Amino acid sequence: MKRDMREGYEGTGPGAITPDGCAVELYARLPVGDEPDVIAAAVPAGARVLELGSGVGRVTHALLERGFTVTAVDESAEMLERVRGARTVCTPIEELRLDETFDVVLLASFLVHAGDAEVRRGLLRTCVRHLAEGGCVLIQREGEEYHTNVPRERVDPAGFTVRIVSTEPVGDGVDAVHAEYVFPDAVWTQTFRSRPLTKEQFEEALEEEGLRVDRYLTQDGMWVRAVAAATGD
Ligand SMILES: C[S@@+](CC[C@H](N)C(=O)[O-])C[C@H]1O[C@@H](n2cnc3c(N)ncnc32)[C@H](O)[C@@H]1O
Image 1: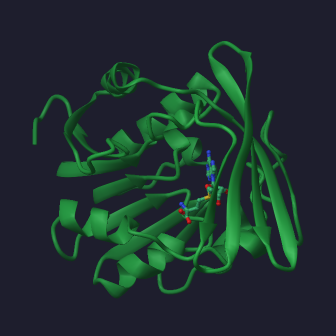
Image 2 (image 1 turned 180 degrees about the horizontal axis):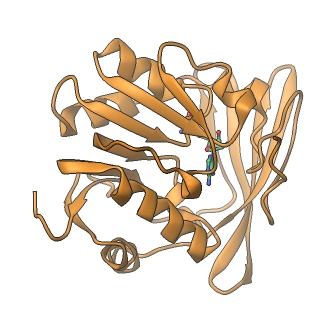
């Protein structure tokens, strides 16, 4: 069954658009960055990874190549159709209930900044529910100036430009973010809701769901290793 667009999220571009406004065709063209290096350095070799919001498998495929086993979860069937070599599960992350746990749960792509705090709680609960004893949750959060250094753009060597065009408060501490991905032959625009979280607010949100920060993995504080608060590391 096809899911409706999430409220406050929309996208334009060729082909299928996901409920959070991603143009699948154009997303599939984005190269992987340093994410697999950051992840591989923070977890045991060969770990079993649950990747939440995997998209087309941009990071999934790089993790598989490094010898990890990956279960890829996304609510977009069109995204998951492009994932190769991993088990896929098509569902909203908040509703995921697998009867197993994982060494590593990955919640990347700033999903923890969901505009709806109840959605964020649901995402984090899914992380906790699927975490093996002694395992960790790796979270990618926004950089410090994500909402203030606007407009900004980055020209990617792969031949496209990403622009954060505007961020506009829509109430309750949430911004509507408007982004553009410009390729030589096509444009993808996305509007989505994002809740800025200071380091303290982020750590509080984790605590609420029984997680604690073990350590920040990158100097910019964007990648975080969290563990179950009760059991320690
Ligand atoms: C911006 S893309 C990132 C994909 C992938 N993490 C990457 O870095 O290439 C976000 C993906 O998460 C999925 N997504 C967003 N919110 C979701 C939710 N609550 N449940 C399931 N999938 C979700 C979208 O369908 C989309 O494929």
